[in-house]
Length: 180
Length: 420
Ligand code: SF4
Image 1 (cartoon, each protein chain N blue to C red):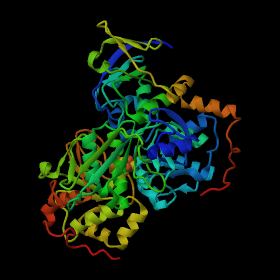
Image 2: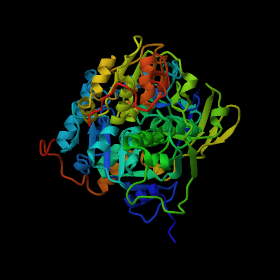
Image 3: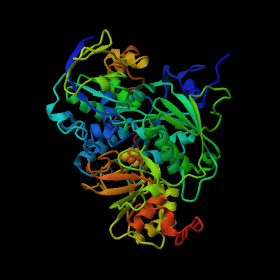
Image 4: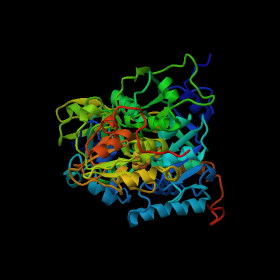
């Protein structure tokens, strides 16, 4: 558990996945391409000026729309340390947890955080500190999502589960064995 | 006493190997089907390998459909499709559907006849919810989730609470499932159903043909829902099952609905936007590219011409729809009207190819999303409507109620001879 200190980038409600990364870039999962176009429809300056460790702060339903993981990857590729939103769309939330992007829910952050201010998140306390002196409670993923997060993402979680039971259930591939 | 469960809770409990589940809890559940496309599968395959898994849990349970950028629009998308193809071959995956035989995944799946009520389908595509119309718990996930499902045959789910949605009354002419969907999304808002399952009922839903029920379930994700469900088989909500809400609308007075840019929840009756000039009309997609959608469009386009200033693009959602439309003369109607007809693909729906919009252009489409930049340039504008409104708009050159074009006589317009 760590402290995150970074500048806040503010966005509104219903930031959808087409805004986070337009579909025309989905021909690739190259992180440089994704980073260069991240959130360009909401703030054309974002991709150029965001710095590693910065935090995205948004309103309700962040990440609504498609299931594309490229949306999470694009945000990660920019070095964003966390996304704090009033609420997240279901699939985006799963993707973020699975890929190890910290997603936190806060009723108040979108209203109180000022764009560009430096904010601090204490993961241990579950608190968000504003430069105005406000202290906000943030909600972390719970249940199975928390287990996945603790493992460092779903890839690692499944890898460990597979290791425990001695690898894939089925034997390794034999090329051309039963193709379509 | 075990608590009475909703249909969705029963399906999840059965797959989690539990007597009962409760809304809000997370459970690991067995999946019956895994679905992915040319955008999401390559990532899922990569992640599955990173998990240390070489073989899918069951090749008979994986369905791969290269539908988004196919036929390949450029070298990069050709490569993504190649990854899919090679994976299918190597893993012995039978449910792989090649260009010329494929369709948009959510329209193709119901045609295959392999989904059974009470089953659980996860798809790395948000509109996987479409197949809820078959009584399946069908939900969209990301590529890493899908990798997990392909590796383990299991995935975690947060059990959604159920909202019952009933439509009663009788639909007016030229009003259909798309209008119910748009109306519902506008009432719930873009996140009104987040972490909820919508269970459909009422006489209007019972009377909808399967094509229409698929359209209705297709758009539940636009309200943020985990799943939409038209209960089928033995998988029904028990009396006394706890619901999050029970919504009932008499839709007899409903007009054709239109969603304005840039939100599928910004919905008005067609007369409020009638007269808005358009540059392009698209009829197709997993929402409205099925047979009956094309029939509705052909009823209006038969014997008429697309407005000189408008480009009409018609894309049957699957090869089977394409063939039937060809056999029954619908394709001829479209071509003679001056439309461009394409092989099945998602194409313009996501701004991929086959009709991307330039700056400032206006399109009316039968698709499901009209976010900024969804169909091309960020300053293009997309309106969403049903296939009849789309066809009427193509003829009129501006957004139009079908009656503006065919008059208010009998439902079936002139000009189409549908051979049986
Ligand atoms: S038709 Fe559009 S919404 Fe449907 S699967 Fe294809 S891109 Fe997605």
